[in-house]
Length: 321
Image (cartoon, rainbow, N blue to C red; front, side, top):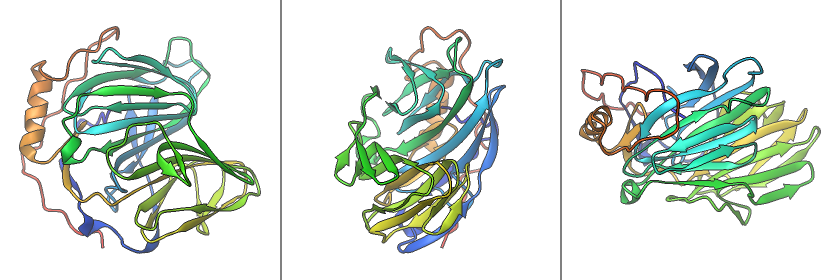
């Protein structure tokens, strides 16, 4: 999924100096962003109070939207570099095309994982004949410097491992949780898991104390470490936890996001992650000139043009804590 913000700001993220090294409970509220004509997303990362969680650098939650008489998601071809996109659905379907020739329809609880590496372009759209409701999350994972120029590729995994406990089914989207490992390619110590809780469930989820974590609420009413987390909000949990308490007031869907704190500082702008303002400027120029990012074939429409880069240079980051 693209960042369609035409006033996209350059921002510096990452660096261990901005990680909370102890358990905390920071409830993050979303910023509402229009994605095309009929899809509004709730953006949780980057956030004014929190830019990254491990290598997770971008989190959008959307739906459930009734698109029975709407075109649904319509995101024209656009570029990415230096990151992985994670497409995750609870309802609906998304048709993915990219410049490596990949074509796949992603359905609920299936992993669509695109590694942009040095450069890729893709489109995302609801199929012409689509389900009534669309509900999901789109997330980005920052690639470390040693892997940020890998060859671009796409993976579609329809069978993912699960961890179960009374009232809980955890599907491992990326990384490892309680000994179960996703087949999705990873480049940093990371975990992403979809947590389906039954009404009345009370359980403890094992965690790695060296990771920092956050929990995104997708649906229902749940308490995370005693904090009620409503759909479309995210609770940042810091580091130092070996387990996490979960309690469901109704059937609920959550996403656990975590990973080893990301040591490198990165520069994010529009749909690019680099290490300097010069990296970003070169990527924008290459996209606008038709170089490097390839062509998405089969999409009925023109690719997105890049917004103008801010005229002012990057501002130094202020510490979160």
